[in-house]
Amino acid sequence: MQTDPAIAEAPQEHILQFFAYEHLPENLKQVSRPFGDLARAIVGTIPRNPERTVALRKLLEAKDAAVRAQVAK
Image (cartoon, rainbow, N blue to C red; front, top):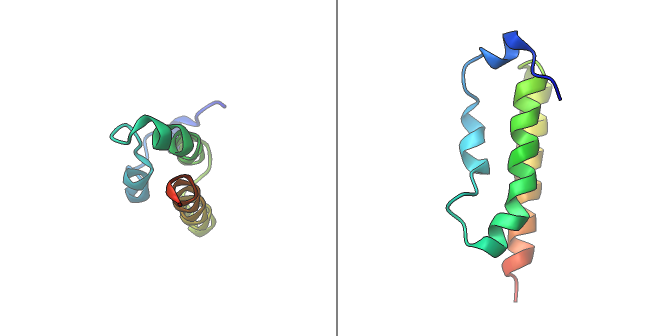
């Protein structure tokens, strides 16, 4: 994906902090990484607007559910 320069210069998206995965154990990192990568791609390619915010929130919900599924007993 190519990043739009105007979007790349936009202020950092607050929600991206919740997509960090570097601190996780390897098994959870493998689950979380694709969501973080997609979140950064969304921020880098889609203009900031309410629908982008909804997309990121729903992606965060999906990531959280996937991580919970990985640790479920």
